[in-house]
Image (cartoon, rainbow, N blue to C red; front, side, top):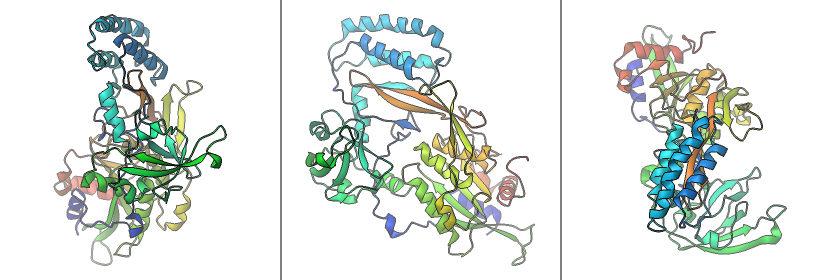
Length: 483
């Protein structure tokens, strides 16, 4: 296949999809622990979501406004509040008088019109990702993360134990049973959970039509989960909308891959008069808890492609990937550029004003099983204006390390992480609490620039210049960085 035709294949859906072996087929859809654009269009990317214990109640608008103001001042990532800190008291006073007028006019517990006023105040931060959600909308968002319909989210510890994350959703069967953050979930419907991620829970749990779940738990104590506090529970499930086929496939299999050949007639090869390059292609659809191991497995499978020739270069496709789990992006970057500073993180949780540094980790133990020299393998990454958050960390980080050339469009520019901070009326403030820059100090608030601009991927089949540039990066004829 010539260069133009092969690149044209990459601009469409992959012509040959190598699905992972049957061992992965038991994976079932589950919600991510992070909050992505699909879940909340106004706050895409990396967000921490916490179940709220408050029951929506009548609250004076002025009181909720004071809560929002205090949370902003305590937790917003930038102490200067994007330059508004010196004027913040005056800004709050302007909205405070309006909120007190609303106190007198509030028609009842379900009157949340004052959230428009709260949002106007938050907008003074000039932060497109910080916002407020009134109790009805907040409850809907939290229910979207209630995987099993009993009112809890899950996390895991270093020993592989599955634990309750945060507090149960108010009014849920888990809340009524007294479950609390840190309680260990030992088994559900007889399935032992230790070592499993939420995406690995058996399909019989998530797809079961049973109105109840049996759950074996270990209650948290002062010394951690205790065998003496182990008990069996039967919890009522609430119905939740099923995932679409596309959503289910995306969660079950966040990675697609194949091998293709690129050739350039002007560079002869001993076999057929053309230079032939075997290129691996990996498309990352979502950064969830499965993605890093699926990328590692895809790399192993690529080396045993049907052509029996390990790829000599790699294309990573992050187009349309709005982000997800930040740590997964860091870990994938570690495959190609180990033990190097990747990000600087500004937040109010630091003990001093210095940003925290996030490094890629050392070479994976799985690297020994990969004959591919990932530290030297030429990499081209495809991005577009929808590539955001974790996608930008992976693409921009490898570009700053001179490990990958970027092709496509400038990325979205999602360099903040939001946390959902509860309010006393049952709503919450979605606030930017962390801000990221690359380790060399380069900001990507306005997006990550590309090496080969291409606003329309149809250019892959029309532009010889674009084709040549990509080919030069894949064959190391052109350096990603001037050295």
